[in-house]
Length: 350
Image (cartoon, rainbow, N blue to C red; front, side):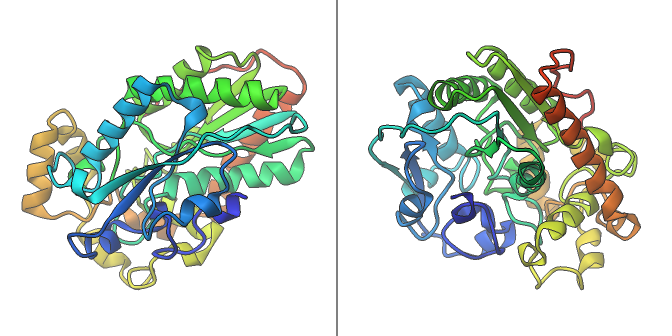
């Protein structure tokens, strides 16, 4: 089922998370996008047929009327161009029926990510880069552990850095916490898993804390949250490689070379580096979103924040191995019934 949704090839298919910022920018100004609202039981193939370019769905079972209205308003404020009056003309909301959820065998562990799948990742990586990385880890775990089931991802979260570049969505921490709580309740009551395992790779501390708050407020009794970049400080934070740089590039490439835009990668690595933004500059601009937007308009950086040339110094087996080893340990503790593991959002910005 997830193979019909998760990106398989960059700049291809109906799902917007598979496209790069630069490809989306090149589309005609009147290109229409679809925001679907559907059931957890709605096949992805049915959702994909709603339009040529389809945003990740919102799920009926995780929505109240008030939350639905606020999420739609927020998404259409951000996408495709932040704070543009034209967005409402370009995004069509299509609400499909809420379906009866089928009876299923309960998994031992239900795993899913809460990532920012509508977030620019420079000229060479798709918007859904975070979800791609998270589900690569989860798929490996599913091959190792019996009763480990992959659930549908929640694809919206809190972000700042992407908004000035366009084609990025921030739903705010308050809405994210509510949505996570409702989603956890929905899948807990439906599938009755022994435990939930929730992951993400997004660098925002406030995004991660909102997820933890949402799970804590839900009916889930046994769960673990993991920021999958927690063990990668040596490769990302200490090497100033925070967003769409070498670490994220090598981890997406590990899933499939087809997920990187061959017009840019690898032959234009130095060109990407020439137009990247430093981490220090991004931090300086973060408190002033209007000023950040002005800077992007004036200086035209490419959306990479940090150092893409770090790619040349990375050992994939070490980078991915650290993520997988930590996640494997989390799942084993859940299966063993160990309640001692900490439930925190991680302390680093990235």
